Length: 185
Image 1 (tube, rainbow, N blue to C red):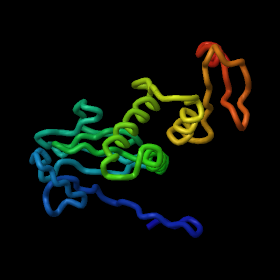
Image 2 (tube, helix red, strand yellow):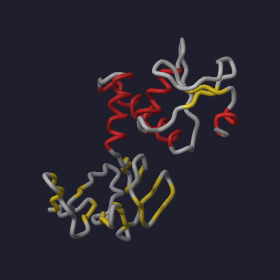
Image 3 (tube, rainbow, N blue to C red):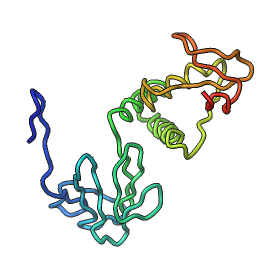
Image 4 (cartoon, rainbow, N blue to C red):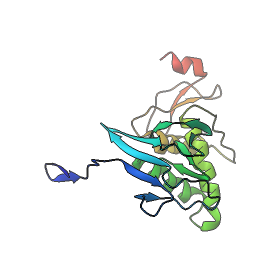
């Protein structure tokens, strides 16, 4: 336990076992039986969490690519055997709640929320474009998603040649005619 003022947090002194064995601290129940008894170890090094393969048969995967070790970062899709886990942060947990508020809280909407969350994560990591479709002006929706995905301190810029160039206000996003113009600022 580390104490700093009135705050305390638990420190991890040894690797955490991840696998299907009953003795693992993180026990995974894989219906496809592709998780090894001791599949991986989770270790803390400085400010990073690292997941290391324990010589498992099926290995670890990040976004589908096999890895021997993974530095955990919010939004990573981690494959362990037949299971997919997603590394989250307080920001990504809040984003999930925001998307559920938009799309619906019911169990019948969970797949839609997961799909939307994956799309936003891919766009935030600059691996895919995020396309919003719908009636009306979607700028405020895009700005809200941006704020929840990237944080309120990150700049949101609109590039629309139909709108006049303007600085951000409480009611509207910063606007430029082209992306190149926005990047030059």
